Image (cartoon, rainbow, N blue to C red; front, side):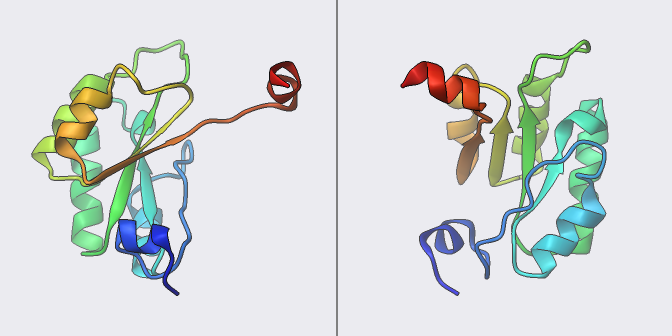
Length: 133
């Protein structure tokens, strides 16, 4: 099946397994990618930059197909080292990044210089929609 998104991401089907807390790890991401979709590792559950590097390498060992890494921008009780995560993504040649939680505007200069594609997933509540109309 060919769509704009399959062509952009280099995948067979327009199926994206978004970053999911606690389960967005290498085995799931690789399985989705192997099946023709886009698997995504969730960086937040890796805790450290080296943990993220290890998870990226696990995916690469499991599949040669495209995969992405989610950068979680939600407010959190614990600091998320997203700038260090981006350094790891550059070093590991990750080409697709998904962000979630809020605008990645401050990270975009770094992301644009290193990735093939970055996309943003924002959650909007009914209340937000009602207030905007």
